[in-house]
Length: 189
Image (cartoon, rainbow, N blue to C red; front, side, top):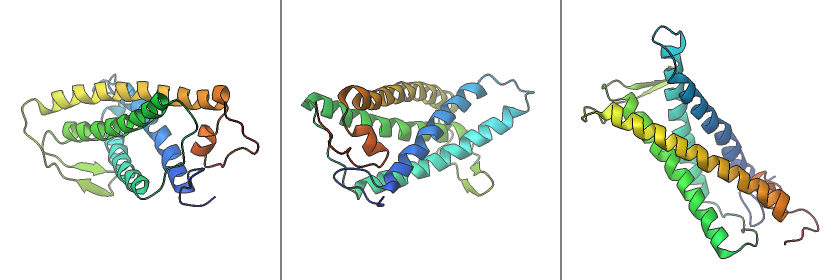
């Protein structure tokens, strides 16, 4: 498999970005959901948020790299579909990226509201550059939660659409996402 995308499939770099980010995003949602129920005396009360913040910063860096890679690569040609479906797919992908960026920004605003930097696994620190806004932590926290739930809804739809393309339409959409070329003798419906 080549590193760069072609007109028929994604290269291994785009495939790795997709399949690395997918479980991380879902795992971050699960960790965040679990963390909000922790009590002050729970041993994970501090450790859970530290992991969540660190992974969140790394996810943002991965997202930036993915968007840069996407900008310098061709995208495989879409499978034949009604124009509205192609447009809906493009909008959904754009919204996925925007939600991820917004979630990372609101997470940063929550974490730095008190003026402290984010320590990323003791590897490096991300300084607090925006702080002291009125109710910053609460407003950013509410937005972070709603954006995360919205993202998970869109992730479910994204996955269902991939399965629909594979099992109902019997096209090459899922194969492209796996970095595979078109099936031999593939017939479009």
